[in-house]
Amino acid sequence: MDEVIYKLDNIIKIYNSGRAERFVATQIVPPSTDPTTGVSCKDVTITPNVSARLYLPKLDADKKVPVLVYYHGGAFCVGSAFDIPWHSYTTALAAKANVIIISIQYRLAPEHPVPVAYEDSYAAFDWVISHADGGSEQLLANHGDLNRLFILGESAGANIVHHVAMYGGAKVHGALLLHPYFLSSKEVESEKKDPQAAENLKGLWKIVCPKTSGLDDPLINPLAEAAPPLGKLRCKRILITVAEKDALRDRGQAYCEKLKESEWKGEVKIWEAAGEGHCFFLANPVSEMALEQDEIVAEFLNKE
Image 1 (cartoon, rainbow, N blue to C red):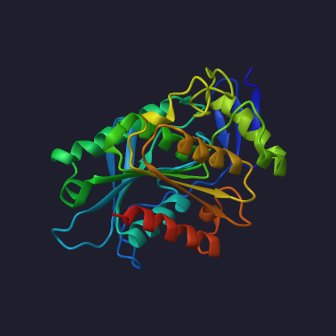
Image 2: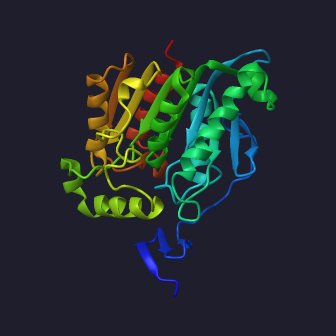
């Protein structure tokens, strides 16, 4: 009998068969040129299972700009690179920061349990860096400066960014983790502000990653004893953003502190959105804090 094993109201219902019902309306936006910013986009196939949307800002014919690989959030089980919130965010960011963005469509749990999302993300990263010597996508090869390669994600996408940074080594110039989805068996103070959200995230992790060792699995807890040392990171700079009312706030702060204590030789910066909750900038991209975060992100991407 197909029984419900996890339910998050108005978001997702997961069955023991691996089937899922998603209640978050997905509004797929076709690729186009944005009339306001002039940013154009096209969809590309990376592997039979992984696709992406490539965003190109208005550029001079011979100009090269930084490249940003974007991993959307959604707790590994909802969301799409082609959905309105992420399409709108990446379009605006490509224009503001004047960067090429490759927004990755990785496979979702529970139909494709974690670690599939990581495997797809590594494959996408490899495809992007293959354009350092030409590659199949001329827009990326002609206009992308892969010496300034950044990776960015929010929530579960920020979790993916940590692992891609470990995987990509020195090929990653900088990493941006917005409201990272990290957990551990030890409660943090910010979880007490929204205990239900914290419990939802903990319960969901065990569903999307059925073979997990638990909340101290290095996949969800990069600070766990069994996790690879942060000193193995080779990127030069990391930006972490958190939100005051987010149950995950202290997870991002702890990650920042551990980076500073580690043998990693790079530069880390953290920024907090006052009075805001988890991934507020996707729901309200023109709020004061969202616009301020945009400035911080764009500055990070263009710092020499």
